[in-house]
Length: 355
Image (cartoon, rainbow, N blue to C red):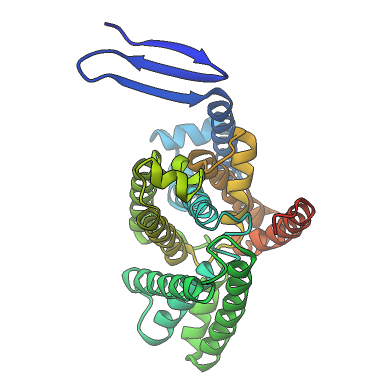
């Protein structure tokens, strides 16, 4: 029998009868939102490849990417601009997924790794490794992952009694975040001046020095980790969103799933932090933007990933060209925009009474 497709309450439903029946349901609105976000991200990426000290037309960019451009165009477009543009898209998608995971765990709109200290923990771990051990990618990744896991344990322990979804967890995370920022400042002061400068540049969150040789392993590892997390959790997350009691009745182990969500989110944040330093507020905003555009009521990983890619790619484009003659760290732009978004979110959620 041939597969057949029909619509049901705004969803596309695919059913393929046979020895092993296959069926799937896709929200039309979510698919359209993701397609629009991908198209906008592609446009921003094309602009990033075109603009700079030497400007190229879209036709010249396409010729260069297909191997028909001049050597100068290949140098600017392929060797210098393309790695940064790809990194912004991939790392932004990873941050979007990580933010969605943490908001699912905490059931709190502020449950972002930026707000509750996980990003600061990964950053402090990376700075400590750069200061006392070395600046190799594997070393920094290990330090960032260890820092994120330590903060995870501390947040969960200190917020016990208030649940994983309460105001207490946010307050504990904010307190730990402040302490970790102070720790980073101390590390900058005690380190050798050259090492402190390297750590400070890395700690600002920047894509300025990105290259496929240096950041390629992080992009590959991050892409694989994102796909593994997305595919592995796509069935369990909707059940977890219904509540722990309901999820348990439907065969989900909430404790085990929560541990997998935490580990997945921390790994994604650690990889991003090791590759480009701590980039704040993308993980906070992307899940909200993706969920609103897709019209989803629960955790929506794909829209969050698409929104994260667009936000970071746009922020990096602004960081390169907003101030003529000066290329800013992308972390400066995300903090400036994210701070305003956080205030708006706080006011809105306070009016709803969800905080």
